[in-house]
Image (tube, rainbow, N blue to C red; front, side):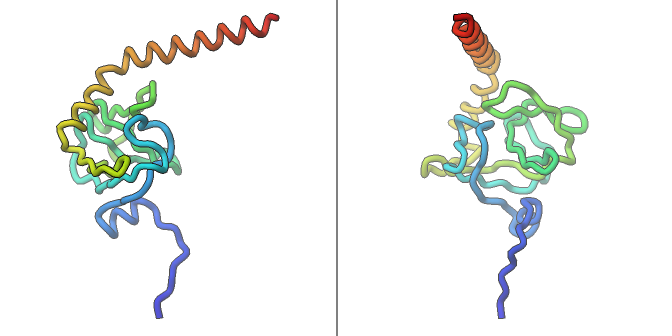
Length: 151
């Protein structure tokens, strides 16, 4: 007789048992590329050192995080989400997998696709200007609140 386990498996367990994790994304850090609960990712176990532009799946405490490698450094990586404005140093041993492909709006995209690689490079190259406008927008909102609050 087969029994159904109600025990939730960790992504590490799924990677070890199946050789890949396939599932939805949650959160906004990889927008506009991956939209929460709309897109499906395929993550494979990390078998070698990651390179610039790779998207790493790593643990931050109890949470899983999927962010882009900006630069490999000794002992780890400098990583940032495509929709984030601060970098993070992630140790090598925290990285458990790498994004190899995904399904976005019904389209299957491999992370080796030339259009995808152009997108990834563009996200990194336009970071400073995007950050400038995010800060400008934040300051404008704060100024408007201050003016409205005086009345």
